Figure 1: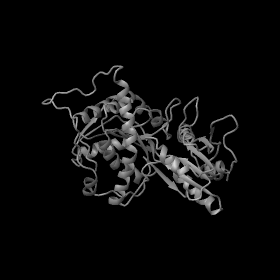
Figure 2: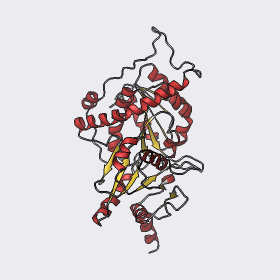
Figure 3: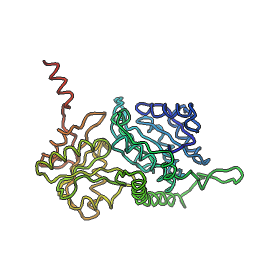
Figure 4: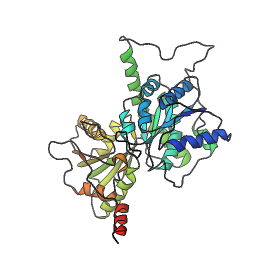
Length: 381
């Protein structure tokens, strides 16, 4: 629907079938694009870099170690301000090898200069990809759409696919202002030294900050045209009067909202806040939504080894800078595909304080998921 003219990728679970389907569309003539099966993820990222520089709307997808193999090129794409769009099918990073979902891969490249949007459902993945091209091309920034491996990439659910005419009306054709053209020779990505390198980074930071209102505006415009909004930067749930707020990213938030509903029925003043946009980090929006909370519990599926929760640390800094000293309790769970079940989430809420004195985070408690319990009960007769 977004009509990329170049698709380049290297297969890696759980991304493979995304690229396989696109290759089939190209082979069947349903998508008029150049499909390139690269020799590696480094090659795939390099191909889309060159394709966009030559004026072609491009797409790639990867996961886990594949994303890390792209790292050098990710920085180059961002530094060159090329509007590449990528899907990261979130997967754990080895070792030990693990093909299941967490956010360690995309969080590991959070400082590369890409907009990062984390989706909760397959419908949001479809809609966010359309928005992603609009954001990327308007802001001159690459956009990474992060969707949980297997939990979303391998789940069947009804999805409303907009018509091509609707997408074309929302997403104009790609016109790259700095297209490389042999008839107008110029350099893209020349050398920089100490007298101006810092200015390039400052320009990137400024562009990223400017992207926040653009993301919100395009989500609002998308809602007007398609009848669906995904919150722009953040998606609040039952926040009115909430004293405790559960905050997280991705498909995890479906279970979190179920827990909120249950606790609300019991008279608990609890709500949820989904962080859809991690880069740019929406400091002002977070302050506005969390200023009245008395307790914040951050659930995240990645860890900064040696430091703890990544989202929690950035949230604490944002709130404290705004003079808000609300305790931010940090829980790391769901790593390597482990379930964060409603029972576990509710148990975390019921604890008076999650992080022990002198600690900044804790791992989610050991648990057995309901399907496992049922299986064990069946096996035990």
